[in-house]
Length: 111
Length: 117
Image 1 (cartoon, each protein chain N blue to C red):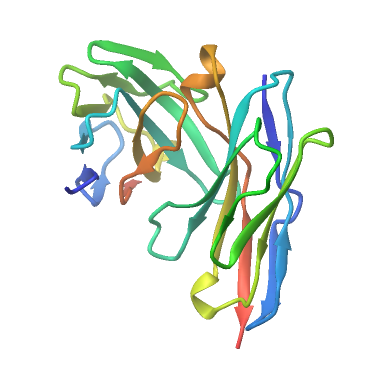
Image 2 (cartoon, rainbow over the protein chains, first blue to last red):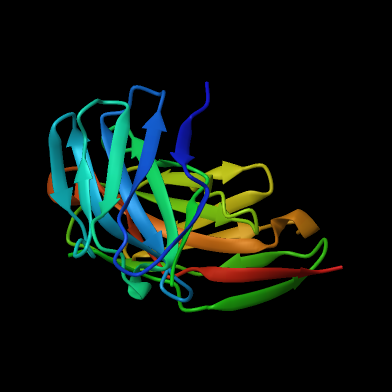
């Protein structure tokens, strides 16, 4: 039982490049989330999904897209990376109403 | 919309002593969950404790306990017999039971706890 995994763990991009972060969970959770964490700002919700095939915007969705084609996977895409997207990205999953389980995080640097 | 406030950006405690981290929240809902998460230098977010609003009894997990004051909308975390491994960032979080507030967590900005040997 791996819980929540994220790929990759580190990535460096140049401005304008694109990439996809992959989140996978093996707990059969309905809900999945993508957060970014910046110094002094806690965790901010980017996008989330309450079920396969559904997604919704969070607090800071601009510049990101997501897809939930399979229940166990939640993809976060950056179409044209900007330095402001330098951050640590966390994926999480949960059952309705209960605590979220987090992945180990991805450190992304955009130069 | 719900908000969660952690007014102590940093705290320090002597090893083996007790420390209390503060959290207040604002909500119009009567049923909800509150959580404390720990984030050590490894970055992994770890659930410390959970409190259901309908329970009057304060939650306890080993050395960690909460003081839940529903009327005051206060949810503080007490760490007893502090250990060096308790040094971390601690986040308070809120989750409702229905609608959009039930779909996601609202986090505070965190309190960084240092433990002095």
